[in-house]
Amino acid sequence: MFGKITEVPMVLATLIFSYFEVLYRMIVPRPRKSIAGQVALITGAGGGIGFQESLQFAAEGAKVILVDVNKKLLNKVVTAVEEKGGTVYSYVCDITSKSEVDLLFEKIWEDVGQVDILVNNAGVMPVRKISDLSQREIELTFHLNIICHFWLIQHVLPGMKKRRSGHIVEIASMAGVVGKSMLTDYCSSKFAVVGLSESLKHELQLEKFTDIHVTCICPMFVDTHLISNVLDHSNYKTDVLLTPEHVASVIVDATLRNKFMVSIPGYLLSLVYFLKLYIPMRALIKLDEFMREGFFPKTKAE
Ligand SMILES: NC(=O)c1ccc[n+]([C@@H]2O[C@H](COP(=O)([O-])OP(=O)(O)OC[C@H]3O[C@@H](n4cnc5c(N)ncnc54)[C@H](O)[C@@H]3O)[C@@H](O)[C@H]2O)c1
Image 1: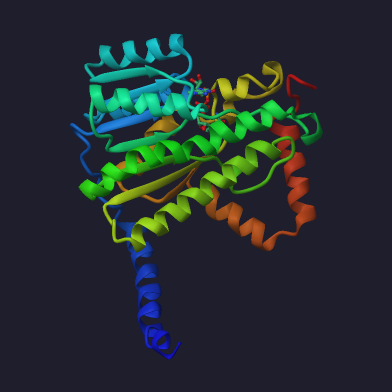
Image 2 (image 1 turned 90 degrees about the vertical axis):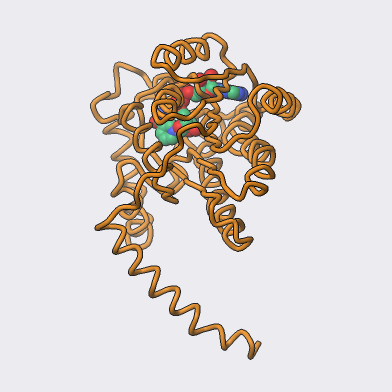
């Protein structure tokens, strides 16, 4: 115990240094690294955000491995990347199946080789009260939104550790920072994504793998199939939604600058943490009701 006490000045010095570093980085952002020639694997690549991530990672010179359960959507994004001159490999795979994921990586090692950047992007969002969620829906949300992230990370991380470099990008959500009605399964799975990202970051840093980076992204609502699938189109305003192009550009930028946690819009994370600490629960619930009625008055199920 006494031995530990002598380490206190070092902990305090690191704390103070970190504050200065954060302030400095607010003025002088980290430079963007080059990912030209690196291999980026994107799950759910056929979806709204995944499609744009595929185009934008490829535009940075990365070879992209695109994975999706939907062959038609996958083919569209493959054509789009190829039209822009990108190098692309594509695989149809249901990543909620462990055996399919194992098989996927056997093929990837054979066809492509190492993966430098993993983007755990695929996700689902049923919008329902907790008592109306079916067992299948709950299990699918957890399998796709968080459990398969472990399998994918376990496949790419040993190689990254050998090379002492790599990047894991986790697409969480603002629903992983603050709870919301009708989204109990989605929010809890996204809270888990934030927890996974934070724990993984700590683990890698403490193991001295300082060049294996973790980035966790928390967007607000984005105009994609995920939203239009569950909300009554006539009742929500698309102008309050973020565009997938913008969201993907922030994701790529955060990756290239090795940022850890980024909300979209950027100010939202600090605002929400502040509100959660200093605003009473009754007021937060009123805010939830206000947002629900203002932005998303009716789900298709209602
Ligand atoms: N759209 C939003 O408002 C929003 C907000 C915050 C976070 N996010 C997160 O961003 C990510 C991407 O969402 P999106 O809006 O582009 O969704 P989307 O519905 O447009 O796309 C999801 C993609 O995942 C694929 N997919 C679904 N099940 C799969 C499976 N079992 N195996 C492989 N692929 C599968 C789908 O075919 C689809 O192409 C998700 O993790 C989502 O939770 C979305």
